[in-house]
Length: 247
Length: 355
Ligand SMILES: Cc1ncc(C[n+]2csc(CCOP(=O)(O)OP(=O)(O)O)c2C)c(N)n1
Ligand code: SF4
Ligand SMILES: [Mg+2]
Image (cartoon, rainbow over all chains, first blue to last red; front, side):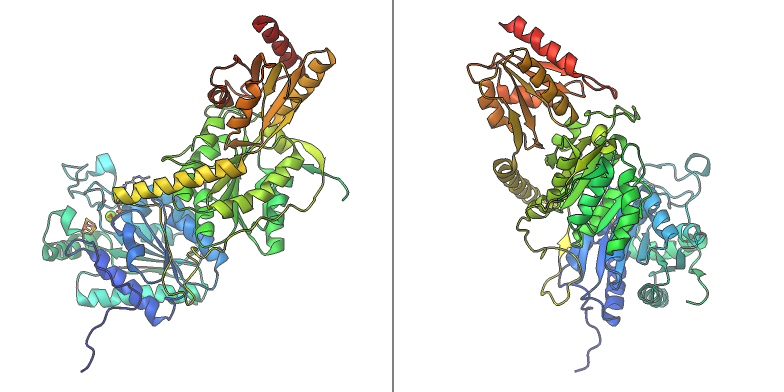
């Protein structure tokens, strides 16, 4: 018998709590596979956020630390500085990273902290039930923006990968999504590249993953992936945003 | 060993390094700036890590990261900055992570003044952040004690896996005094097998979290904390007394005011008044039992609490004394410091009144 598929050794044997069609589960798998392929499950330290992925520590096979809301980059700064040869990763949602933790991510990037951030941008506060995030698209409905996000009232959505790329400390930023298999494969390559660059010590590495939250978007999983490709990817361009020469 | 002249803030920083502190994270604020400044020079010499953080929030969360991955870490600040650290102190308590936090208190509320104060006593001893937690709070009254307490704080934090606070008023941070670098008795510290520092062959992964979403689980955890706090109250409560047995007026003070109160006690004694001093060295756990015992002596006519606040430790004293004797208060605030004369005069007045 040939093995067609197996769960990554980077994940524990647990049932995930994520909703059907949620991107979190897929991204967990990609991160775990990259850790496994690089042979670092035994040394990696993952910092999880506050948000739907708050239980990520129950799923990953490496050591994990749950940070409070938005502070994962500060937590990871101390870990990486004291464990320089180990892979250190923060996994953060858009409320966590782009709103309450905006200062922490900007300053970690500015200092060129040598860890990787996997940024789960689903344009909504998932865990608390669909409130507006800084990344919510113009016109997109949220429980705290019932008429839809308006530019005059809320400002335009923030493009974190581009903003952070203005900082010299950031060595690599790419935006990906997992809405279909070709994109998923690209996403995995980006995460693996970020990890490899981290381990070679070039600087701060950042992968933004446009993600689906069918539950709070009020869509089926298929509709959500379609909406993501048509609307989110139009505002948040996919691809490499920055790659420092020589890396 | 020879005595050396040290400034309080720098002595605290050096004491931390000698205690094996490997990381310092902090944000500038007066009157504690010499601590991060000293650390930025000193820690690289011993292979340690210094980061000037973007805020006090970031600093305490950096401490959280270092601690969760098994490394001895410290942060320091002064009152407004310590307010920002409360989020992280609560998380450290919940994650059961060791940490040393120094508060060189200044007058408040708000931006207040940069002059010395003791106005953060409630914040330090009642938890300060969200949740039912305590921190061990050590209150030095001179630089030698600040140095000794800082060194021991790291062991206490590791033994009980919780944040330990050095609660110093601005005077302790800014003053220079001769001190001696004598070896601090090392306490037995358990191995950090809980740390998330990478599995390295460990059969299971370690997961540090402050989240316990199921209520029964969360209650069980809170009960375990309660037990831990009881053990600490039994084993780690500390105080000092001077002529407190057989006194008529028992003056109670901690930190800088306790030194001034000691002079007042001596002045009163010279005039034939039986005065005594009770000085808590740990303000959490508070030495309630001994204070109650002393206050209950037939000789004691009143207890006088002296603080650089509007009366915060006063409440712990009242709780301990349980109304068996009158408890009076003398406080200076906003950066002002009580004087020997004022304390002695207050004591005399109180005695005349209660006799
Ligand atoms: C200090 C603090 N403020 C607010 C919350 C409540 N909270 C929990 S999850 C969350 C939003 C998370 O949204 P996001 O980061 O986008 O993650 P997602 O759930 O969408 O993956 C908020 C506001 C909290 N736990 N802590
Ligand atoms: S609420 Fe949204 S982000 Fe959270 S698990 Fe469900 S689909 Fe995923
Ligand atoms: Mg989100």
